[in-house]
Image (cartoon, rainbow, N blue to C red; front, side, top):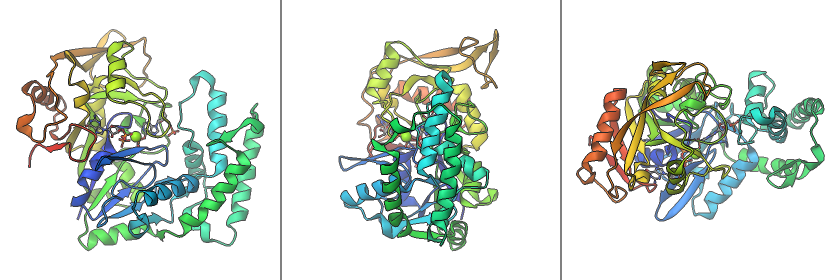
Length: 431
Ligand code: GDP
Ligand code: IMO
Ligand code: MG
């Protein structure tokens, strides 16, 4: 069997969680391969909304196993809160949840360091979710991180204290008021205590050698869907560096984040919004500062699922999308949230950039908003409510023409059309 992949092609929040949930009945295992609780994946069904941060989006289907892979980083405190929320909504995740012993832990001091680094960057700050992502991945690469498998070792406390002291040494170098620092409305000491109390929940889960778990499953004919977090334009290597996250969000992350060989990758479903959003700082060529941008934010409820911050909004960016498709070898596209533009008179799509007085159709190395202008193709809006459509023939012609234009430009089929946040609001074009 092969591993199919669902990942984001823009700056995150494309609707990956919803799409994974819709696909879950077709798969035996859903596996997260990178990122951590900077992710917020929203699922809606039966009139209820659920937001997941670390746990894979297959968790609501009782027949599916869910794996948190070695490439993911886990904050035990946030993880416990997620488990408690699921229990409160009547789901017992324990039976179907497997966690890699090789996944790294986010320590309280990683969150402290995130806050310190962002503060010292001043106006150049990344706009991190402040979940400790950068510092935790830094420790992993520096070979001094703590892993889930360490939780059961005799000297865990000792290893923890050593790392904590190292982190405090770093903080001392900066002008940072520790006494005023809070994490989730708690002092550092209160948070650290709650963090330690949360370890029990993590230890009580099924901790596995995930690379063997997944390869044996594939060998025995089980199907696997890998769930990406963030988006391609936030990838540590290929995103709009340094305004990126600290992991490989692209398809190569599936291999390193789960222990899967490249030839085992099957279909790659690339999810993109019919427009663009970005939360946090960094270049955004098609960003809108007018009433259209405000309408996208309002009708699209564009506020971060993890931080609640307003998302910046703009038109669809085809050069960036083409770049993302190339990096991921996308086989099928999934378009989401076109319904947000149902009442728009005109819909624009950027097909090229004007960059240093030259027309280009690729995402340049360096983006400085003054030097780059988006060039648009304009479409007449469909002015119909597509959110209620349940089949292809119910979709308005101008909307289908708009999809055909995108397909023609990027040379990959749009196989799935999401017309609303609910599980049921999904149209498969080729089934
Ligand atoms: P993710 O991080 O990629 O999983 O996306 P988020 O959950 O952060 O953000 C996507 C938001 O759009 C969520 O609130 C979803 O419920 C919602 N959503 C997903 N697909 C659609 C769609 O087709 N139409 C509308 N209107 N909302 C959608
Ligand atoms: P999902 O999986 C949108 C952004 C942050 C910031 C940058 C770095 O829900 O799509 P980090 O906390 O990783 O140091 O932040 O990346 N970011 C996301 N934006 N969706 C996400 O995840 C994101 N995860 C991180 O806003 O700009
Ligand atoms: Mg999200």
